[in-house]
Amino acid sequence: KGSYVNISLTMITPRARGNVTRQANKKLRRERIFNIAKNLIASKGLEEFTISELAEVAAVTAPTIHNLFGKKEDIADELVAELILALQKVMSFEPKSDPLESALYYVSSVAAMYKGKEDFYRSAYMAAEKTGAFEDRESVDGFYQQSIKIAEQCVTNALEGGFLLGKIDRAILTRQLYQSHRIGRQDWVFGYINLDQYHDQVLEAMLMVYATDASPECHKRISKKLKSI
Image (cartoon, rainbow, N blue to C red; front, side):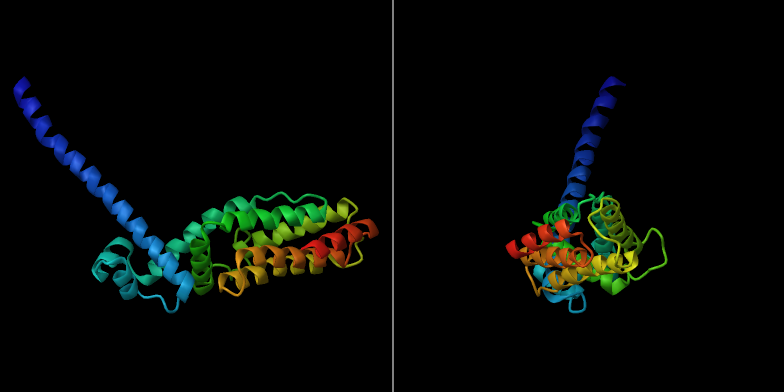
């Protein structure tokens, strides 16, 4: 009995190891092809992206792509799912009372998150726009409402800290803060500006919104920062 068990184990172990190796190789292969897909979508746009081109660039067959990912729409959905997970950290942002500090921290944090992963974020945002992931303005847990909530908290904290005068409706300031980031993000996603320009453009736009209702001292500090950008 002892020798039978030993023989069986020596027969099973190589197979088990072989299966682990195959799964690991499949995972690496999938990651490599997914990275190529991100690059293609980021450079060409989701509309122009095709499974056949992905297969050609990745040096595999189209059936291999379908086996690993499914259809083009499935790749887009996977990108959006990863994007939402990545954005959760930004959504936990706690605005500071000082609007200048708050704007600097927020924009720098987002730009740092994008850095080194620009293909992923560009392609993921394109996929999100195409699939309408950001269009649901009613869902409390949706991206739009969460973004508005952050902007609103920025305005509220600045008002309570005495940095804003309260002469301009809070809803207007909130909406314009949100638009400041949305427009800058779109310009960057579609390649009109680079990441450094994105940082400066969004920061400028946010500070301009705050400046319209800033206290004299806060306005002076914002103006000084704007001149240095």
